[in-house]
Length: 330
Image (cartoon, rainbow, N blue to C red; front, side):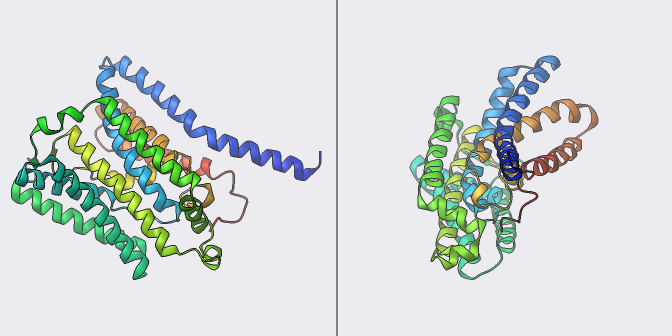
């Protein structure tokens, strides 16, 4: 066996390891959570319900955001978009009493916010970091003003619980996640939308020279993210039929962590994986709950965030080991 063949086999083994590792980590974290909950004497079904409600929302919003991250870009305003969409949805229902109009308002606002971000970034060539920070600040401020004026910052605004109670069942939330993930996986892995976005993320100069329109696919990516935000905002109201100024406040940064936990490089490109959002989303929620049980209950709030940050850096190191010795993908 010559040296080139040996290096190739070694590279393939590393690549398989990086692919399998997020799934192994998810299974291990889930087992640790079950053991931890039982050791503390807590009710496991209650924690499983919490994990489902938190994990489904994060996984759905992160799945839509994967299209943006694949381009080598990012959007930290998705949490604020979720809050603003849910806020407008509650206001529309309270004004009309119409469930259908509430859904239209939620998805219309979510997609509209994403389109505005994409137009500012793509058409006017404003850096994505600037547009997303600006959108996050504006949407959070407007939502906070609406909530404070109509219900108070602490009490928030709400809709009658019976409106969304029929949807507050595990099978419905799993079905929504499954359908949305299946659609996104088909678009991402089996259509030119996903292939061209990976190409743009890996080498935008070559992609542009082949005639691929970056603005077009950036707008499509933000639309997919907007749909995910709309679904996430609706499921947030299903779980808790009220909105406060702190609703979905951490989703924006949690998406970045979740995607990395799922084994997707933060640089995007051809190594992007649509399943990273779901695997990483649930892994992060499980890890966060384990740390809350083991650390914050004894040492005070905040230490788990430090441990999560260290874990995040470790995951970035491991997921990058299969291309660390090669040229950068962008």
